[in-house]
Length: 325
Image 1 (cartoon, rainbow, N blue to C red):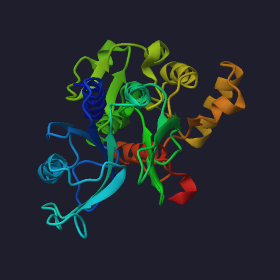
Image 2: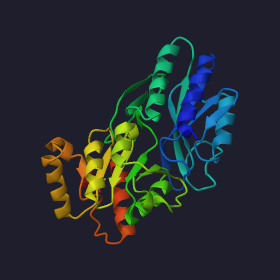
Image 3: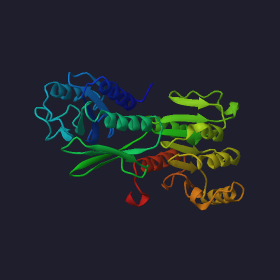
Image 4: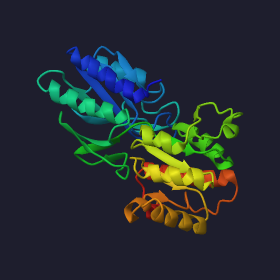
């Protein structure tokens, strides 16, 4: 199934190509309970037809009624659902609060520019380069520019909202291990795409992992063939240098935003020295490798180590530096 937000952008482009204006809406902040997080999108026509979701059903009906009755100004604006928000919807059933960026996009006059920007968003959601959408409030102006994983996912100022756009986050588990099992579970719970690559048939023959794409292939080969796009975290968790070293050598040549290998400080230092001496990696490439992997939480058990690993992946994905924790 295609990523829901990708379907939203494709539907917006289809409607605009037919000469129909659209309302493109993006969740920019949530407070309390909220089934969809910042960045979630919905597109609607003026007659109330829509694609996507903002809240899993809490606000869509009211929002679409307002679109159909033309209650919103035809400009970029931020609206709130929940405490202090749009009347009469002052309180959501879940008790949460949603701030939503609402953009009105006309197909006429600037159609080529609008479609060009949406095409860029579509490429980003398909695994192309990350981008930042700057949407200027109180106007119909917007622009796209290159982005990076250390950019905030959402940044709001008085005059604009900036949104980082990219593919659904992917975790590549480079080899099966007890820690990889827990990482897979946590990554799925976070909504990530999870791919396990392991060339050892005996290691994966009896695995039953609903939601995990299991591939009997060398992780390095999968990454080399395009598996490591800009929204990918590569996790080497086997302690086996025959798997881990090749994985890391290939991962640093990819656009993966997070590359990590499990091991003690001594093991990690030896691994980095080996990658430099034998693999020819330079200092800048070695700096991309998180080794030892994960946040240093004093973890001991596989589950604890997996929590530390996925917490660090989440930290980088959200554009947070360690000193901010």
